[in-house]
Image 1 (cartoon, helix red, strand yellow):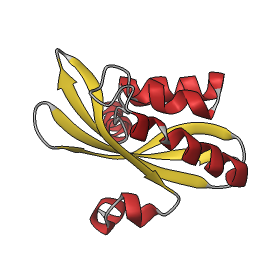
Image 2: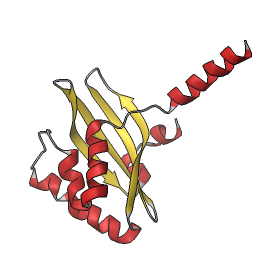
Image 3: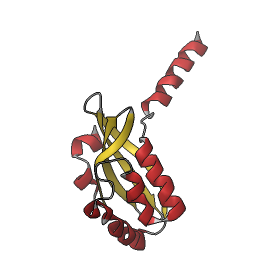
Image 4: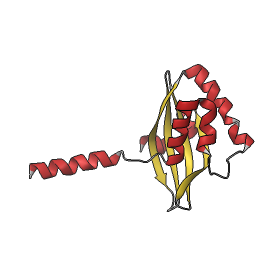
Length: 137
């Protein structure tokens, strides 16, 4: 009986943090690590209506500026997710650099069974990206 209860609680503990970043964010992180800051935004927006948009792509300059202050990009971690509908979810994430985190969010839309990014933001200030309710919920 102890084994069953322990197994049950372990399954719950592992499932609590099982939020999926989404393929676009994971691919953007991999592209950033492999090819540098300029690869992050194009990879994030691949297949999206924003793909190739000059305003969106100009955010690569902001990432380079962040990198110059905070050091090398290390990884992305999921912070929280809000499912808005069957096809839409908002993912809050943390971009870890050598010297500081950067906070981001991305609206993921399921199109033809695959998620694409339809909106994204990142900032060095947490509460610009995530409302208090998201952080302290």
